[in-house]
Amino acid sequence: MQIAEPLLVAIEELSKLPGIGKKTAQRLALHILKNDNDRVDSLIKSIKDLKTKLRFCSRCFNLSEEELCEICKSSKRDISLVCVVEEASDVIAIEKTHEFNGLYHVIGGVLSPLTGVTPDSLKIKELLKRFENENIREVILALNPDTEGETTSLYIAKLIKPLGISVTRIARGLPIGGDLEFADEATIGRAMLNRISI
Amino acid sequence: MQIAEPLLVAIEELSKLPGIGKKTAQRLALHILKNDNDRVDSLIKSIKDLKTKLRFCSRCFNLSEEELCEICKSSKRDISLVCVVEEASDVIAIEKTHEFNGLYHVIGGVLSPLTGVTPDSLKIKELLKRFENENIREVILALNPDTEGETTSLYIAKLIKPLGISVTRIARGLPIGGDLEFADEATIGRAMLNRISI
Image (tube, rainbow over all chains, first blue to last red; front, side):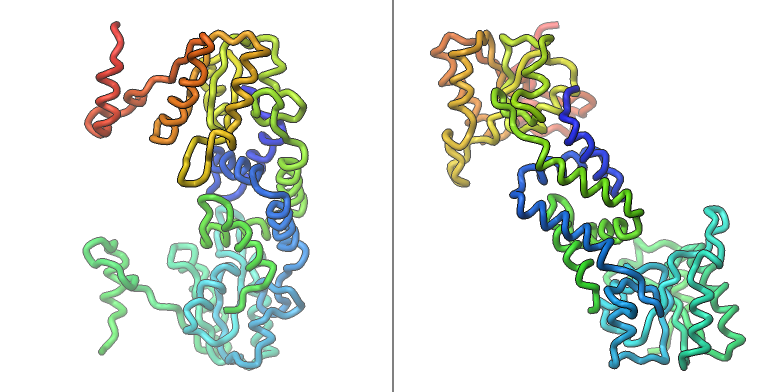
């Protein structure tokens, strides 16, 4: 097969991205090839800027352009409320709901002894340090509802509770628009257990 | 919502790629952010090289790093056979089969009066010119089996036949591994019509 070298390299590089296989990578590469130089330049610039202009907020480890992120800098947020999430993408997901007005703390993953993720490789120490300097009333744990997420939640809760700070976890239950018939037993079971009076 | 500007811009740029929606673009951007600088640099370089190092072969309009593409330059190909395809990606697809040993001609699309693609915007003139300089015996039309592809095939065949050159078209039929039960009527009909003796 005689594929030109630069195309092969670009396919190789693009297919390293998550969810992008060789076929998709080839389609992307050929699409980029057909684009104007201007459009390709702005794509390249945006990727470059990602690495050069963004860093982690020194307080909550959310993505930020400056020392403190927009959320930590805002005077409109409830600073007595901290929501603990795994990744910066979770901050975006929660912000989209407009249901939360507190601050965040991105721990950067979940505990997973098998893959070598210990408490020290997460930003848990940094979370505990915030309780010394900030007047935090409640910590909401919003980790993913899987085994590692649950374990990490329990681990963090155990560390925080002795400090006299209220610890909550976001609710598990049927997703809005979901169908009882197609939900799994664990989800329905949790939804029954966590029923609320109306 | 408080998403950092560089991230927003990268999501916007990545979601312009085909088949990449906002959600996928966000996942890609956050993945790139977590990568080492070295890996991001090689991704950027590969995209840049696509535009700077590749051009179109002056003979067959396949992608090439030099004036003539690897296939046109090769002394091992049957130069009396030319396969006409829509896009450079089709050359890659056919080369992967190892069933074709002739040359190619990439016309760059199909006739589509509605979207303004006329014979002049395709490399059809350039194909006809090749008959003057090259000793071509057979032209194989390998355009996509849809209405526009069929129309374009007929258009090209009509131009070539008077020159005394044999014109063929790749077969339509059931795809290998396909299931008769789930094939559409048009495909089964074509497969019946084009049956061959065994």
